Image (cartoon, rainbow, N blue to C red):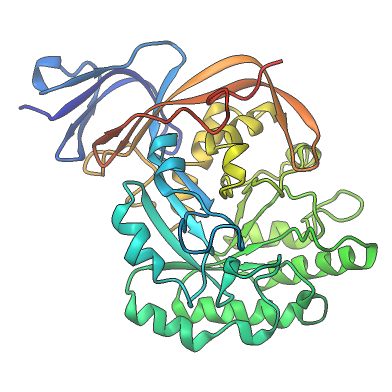
Length: 405
């Protein structure tokens, strides 16, 4: 038997399946054909030899929260987006989920322009607000009328299979008085489409004590509103509306929601990761189900999904922990666990080959606090359905590793 490609001698790490050791992976027609120890090299048309004790072959990484509607908005107006492949296959990531970069008014940019050119698998969630991040200002929702359930249903009819979720951001002045109504309407819209609701917590615009308390109330209401499969994103935000009460304890609704099948996603971004919050949550056993980047064009200059993973390793998470959070757990959050997030015979050959670099690295959180970590993660090679990609130089001027001091 002749395989197209043989990944040979690599240390395979697939925590979702309990794989952790040296295995060969044979690929034919873009699919994984065999996984075994010491597959003969002569059985393959081409062999990729994996060398180095620090190198790992993991399932294709999945970034559950990104913004890749590049070109959907006028540059300089609204939130700048990333090129899907720059933060995808060129960054060691095979699948990205775009989380509400656009609303129904401009959702058509995805089937017309983004999806046809992307080598990275792109999963699309539509913003509950009709124009989403295209409008100037921090808020996506200014009135209840911004959520147009009829238009969302029409978008599904004209784009079958495109919308995988509805995204809502609890940000802006409208939530002070109408927060519960907005959350309820967004949830109803997601239920109309039979897709999950992903909600951004952490409102940087709520600065005073009363506004912060109000956002806390809304987070608790949100958690009670959620159904199995819904996603809370920005678990570790230091901003108003976080899941910890003023005394630093999780609201009781957090455990209840998690027990009910709600996904807790970290989504670091530039504005929603506090290292002290993350450490406190780890001490309490409140771990994110998934690790994602929330990359935007501006955020791309500061971090990548792999760096987000390394930040959690600085807290004490193991490599297996962070790989699981970006593979099998992320696939499950997207209801793609039967297709993505595992190295298995018959599946697409989605693989990320990474190096685990030991050192003394510096990171920075949203608040500007600098902290140290012992590991950096570097993309070496990416396979998406068997197609091979080399990483770009990196998100930083110095490359892929966080700055060393």
